[in-house]
Length: 93
Image (tube, rainbow, N blue to C red; front, side, top):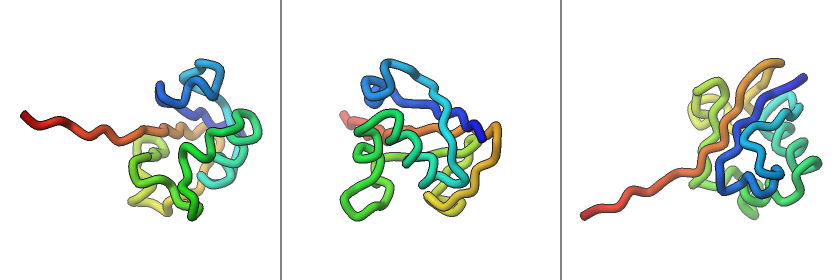
């Protein structure tokens, strides 16, 4: 099952400067494990030490936020698109 994963600029150094990669997994957690096999170090940037997605990382499946689905247990299907998006804090005046 091939899933397209959009990689944010801060993580592209781990994916050899690729902004999109292919990965496999029945759910987000398996997808991240597959990414880790091919791009060591990416998992620790996405998950915290307790095994949860870091609070400043947003993951979308076909433009739907996994926080409103089933988090890292969100089911994936062949052809899905996953975006990993670091949260950006805006500055005030």
